[in-house]
Length: 218
Image (cartoon, rainbow, N blue to C red; front, side, top):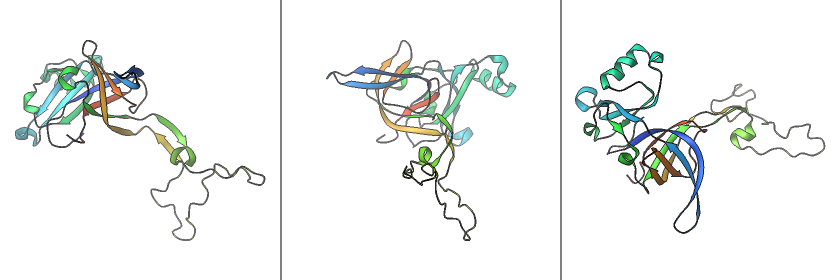
C-alpha cells in the first residue's frame, strides 16, 4: 500500500466483532473490536537501498514448515518467527524502526485518535442488478410476467452490437478491498492488544484488517 508523505503509524489486526460502550454523557456508542497484538517489523526500506522509506509489518503466527524457503530466509534475516500476513506501510520515520521490533497498540494509537481501516468486504456471490446496484424493481401487477427483478434493456442493438464495458449488470458482488476513513479510537486495551473503534469496518469476523493513521487532516 502507499500513503501520503509524513509520519504514519499502522498495525495489522483481526476483526473480533462488534460490541457497545457508553460515553461520559451516557450515550450508546457501537464499536468494533480489533486484535492488533503480535505485530512485528520484518523489514525496513530506505532511500539509499530501495528509493523510498517504508516498513514491512508481520502479523499472525504460522507453522514454520508451511513457509517457503525464500520467506523463511526473509524472516530469519529479521530475527523473527514466521508470520502469516505481511503489509508494507510508507512512512518518513522508517529509520526509527529496526527489524524484529515488536509494535504494541499503545505505541501506535491513543484513545481519541482518528484511523483509516482497510479490509476485504464480505463476498455476496452472484447477485442481480437490484441487490448489486440498487436498481428499482418493476411493478408487481397482473400481466407483468415475472419481470419485476429483471434488468430490462441494456441498450445494445445494431449499434454497437455489443455490451459496453462497465455496464451495471448482474455479477459477482463483494469480496473487494475497501477502506473506511476517519474512524475514532474509543478505547485501547494495552494488556490484551485490542482496539475499540467507533462504527463498522469492512469484512467478516476473523477477517484481517489494516489500521493506520487517518490520511485526512494528517
